[in-house]
Structure formats: C-alpha cells, structure tokens
Length: 71
Image 1 (cartoon, rainbow, N blue to C red):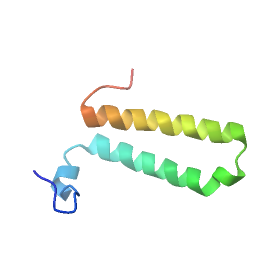
Image 2 (cartoon, rainbow, N blue to C red):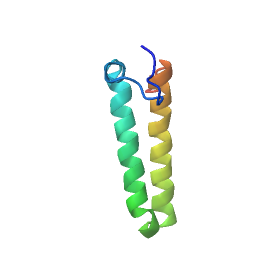
Image 3 (tube, rainbow, N blue to C red):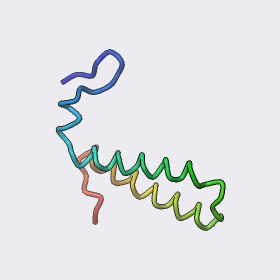
Image 4 (cartoon, rainbow, N blue to C red):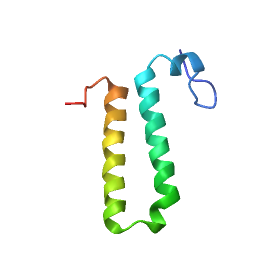
C-alpha cells in the first residue's frame, strides 16, 4: 500500500504492525512527559529520561526494520 499524497500511511497499513504502533505511542508519551517536566528535573533525572527515550527509540528502530532489539 502506498502513502497518501501528504506522506501519511493509510490506516490499514498502520494496523499491520501493532508492535511498532505501540512502541511509537510509548515513545510519543515519553517525549510529552519530558517536555512537561524537563525544566524542573535535576540533571540526573534528565539524563535518565534521555536514556529511557534512547532505549525506546532503539526498540522502535528494531520493530521498523524487523530486527529483535529485546536481547
């Protein structure tokens, strides 16, 4: 299935990989959380949040490319 003119994938294509969709939702929620609280966090809390986001992004890349990143 090809993307629509705006570059967005069709709903049926998004549902083909529920794991990827769930990981993207997790990543977006984490980004929102960082955005809401980063100004009040200590450097250690910010570093922990960045490390968690990096781990989520790694899992997203793995799911998108078909590689297992859980090991």
